[in-house]
Image (tube, rainbow, N blue to C red; front, side):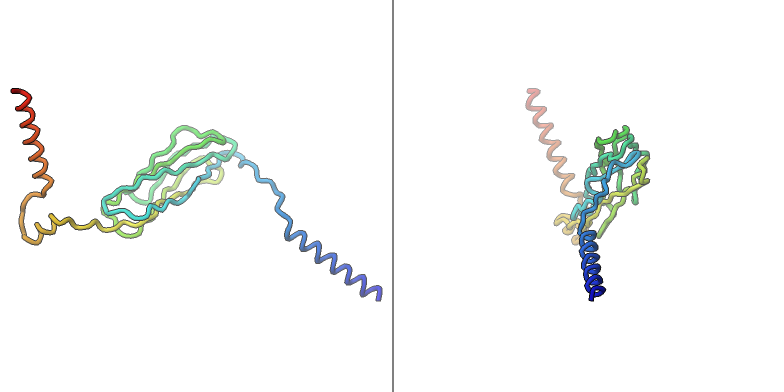
Length: 178
């Protein structure tokens, strides 16, 4: 009987200990990374949709969460349609910098995922950010549809507007001279 009672008490104590360890919060403190470290506010930007030929500009902000100055040496892009600009000076620990990505959708169609690979002296090595979204077909203009249907070789309306503007400007100059 004593053995059974002792076994039951031991099992109960073991169960409580296991439960306490499972629910205890992690006490491991996370400090700054030794050396430079880059931490982005966001690593992916969804630009929604853009009409073909349109452009998207977005600035990715980052912070040096390490203990040494961070230097971005290069940014590789997945396509020539995306051009990056970035903070060229060393970013001191605790300070921020930025990377601006410019995406030109000319010649693109459908879903896009433009990846920028950031090469730096960060302890973790290179990292990536991306622009994602959809490029939609530009709507056909009524003028170009009419011209195509008629088989005409007439100049677009924009040229006519320019000529009218030039004539109006010339008339104003003559009126001021008199």
